[in-house]
Image (tube, rainbow, N blue to C red):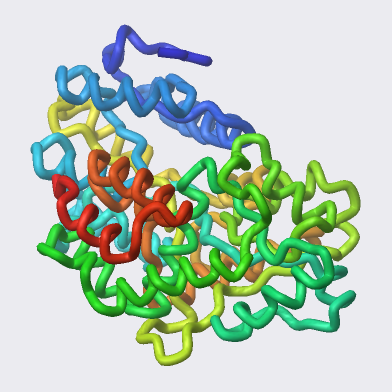
Length: 420
């Protein structure tokens, strides 16, 4: 365990009298925003405070599951939603918040409707969307496109046609940090959506037998391998890691023309890319439509939000404090902080009125429109699926992209993966 900061807790998952406890992730600038939110709440609620503890990502994942199993979890449980939240619900570890939202309609109406998808299990809401949205975006280098006289692709066939154009110009069509595996997953998420529609992955997430073998799913897997065989990705992509931001560097140094990645990479490219972002050299568009596909081109994939759930075993007085804290989340000060300090879009309807004057206004508006208006926003697969299935998925993605297995073998392997 790696605890980076702690204030006021009385032991693992325990809160002092008159307090509720919460565990948060420690990455910056998010930690500062989260801590400020807690401090502001505590200043306004001296008789019912929230005690926060911050953990590094991997330590948090291990610690929270152990603590919940041992009935030592904090009052408020930070979660990615999706498959992990479904496990909590299945085991009776978190409270149903549907009635709370019904009693606090402003709390629901203030948030993107799409942010509730990963917080909902069997039609019931079990977590509060609490932070920012991070869809997956197709970035491109405007200078390289101008050099070859091309426009960003709006269809899959247009994307395939750009592969030889950029390869002949001595530029990798697409950057990819394939060694990290989840970066490759983003491609399948969009291809499944555009080809099969969101219903196919929903059936997978619901654990319906043989869902991976749907004809449209096999078609999407085949398209992915066609793109790889055509030389769509940079040479040696399976040895590149996302943690080093080497994939982003290929884009902003002009060695790759495009990159499919999360909205969160905008900030790091702005920080590390010199004048690439401030100079207007970075472009961004939605993932292309697939000709004949069933998915709406307006659909998004990625992280619809982060979430806070309520520990079902917590004492009633702690739950009351937690619910007061829930009401305070994403207030104007919080929302402004996510925009100005993190360069991201909080899941607040109408927050785009705050973008004016920001040097990142164009990107923020793009993310806002893409996320708030999406007919369907599919959560990242490794979070939407149960943890055991997610690991099987990542292993098979690595093999699929390495041409070690066929689409049919991929589907067979995934059909046999754990569903809970």
